[in-house]
Length: 424
Ligand code: HSE
Image (cartoon, rainbow, N blue to C red; front, side):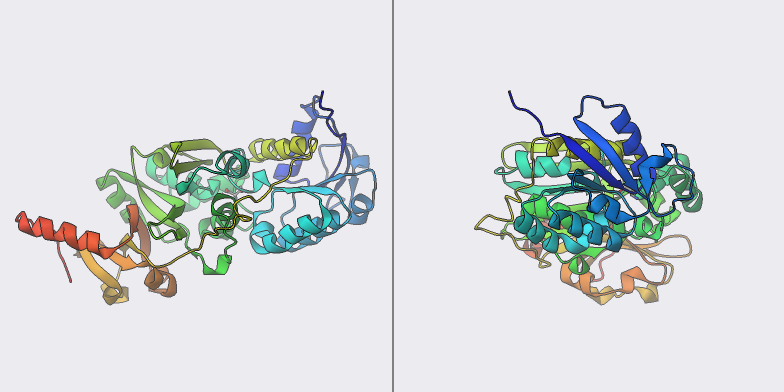
């Protein structure tokens, strides 16, 4: 019979997730783990736990030889990195939910794990309750991953759901997301896509063995989406979602970004409402699979932390299998996307950036275009992030080569149909 290691825990942080974990631990007596100490920033704040559990001195946890697992659940990514580093260096295993820290320091943290032999797990840091990291590591270790499309930020998905389904204003929907504890303490991180970008950065490591520099990944959030954009989406039988995407192209390279997208109402991603997250994986052998679950909130996030703690009792560690493969993957910006651009002033649109414009409307009530643009051009220009311009990729946005588009256009012309308002 396998005997599981006895775990003694030291937790950093007693916010939404920390307190959730405290409750979950108390409800899981089967777990062979004892909570010894919780380190907090504000010792005077009243807590729903015995006072003797708390300390404001991080060394009390880090220097305690009995504590063999540090659970890091604080907001400050820099402080989190210092704590995780010190914990690993002293041979303790670590569970973290800090996506910003992981996005910024994964390379050093990989090295530290190698050097110390200690394990760092972080299932809660992406898609909270959905076990996506362990599945990408273990289940999809050999199956060839064609694409992975995901809603990874609960707050923006909550806001978009309220705008589409209940016609709530952006501002009121955001206030609700904050009150329910889904949003970051600085909600700009959610709304402008930074949180989703952070999560995508390290998910790409487990999906494709990539260690991307997050500064080089193209992203934006939902800050510029207007009710007119939502109306246009409805007309196209779509909703708008903030989608984190990655696709292995025919040339073997990987396209990856985090951008708003039109999602057909019958697509799995459209099914994801409120603070739920979801991941659609397409692979060679398993074909299409959909993972769905709560992506934010106290207990759902704590459930993933709990699962990581439990995994440490049998010495589980990520092997970063895809990272260690001989044949490595590479990111590329050499492809095209079809994008919807909403605007208030036509002069702010760099129309020459487009390969072709399939549709455009510019009058008093409707101002938008749909066109094909090279991804490198999108990535390196900023006009679409300024001056009330909104960008939403169309459903299934990636076009690998323009030859296919030209061929399609030619066959339409031959069939006697010339399409909408072409500029080029
Ligand atoms: N602010 C995050 C979100 C919390 O809304 O998804 C979970 O990571």
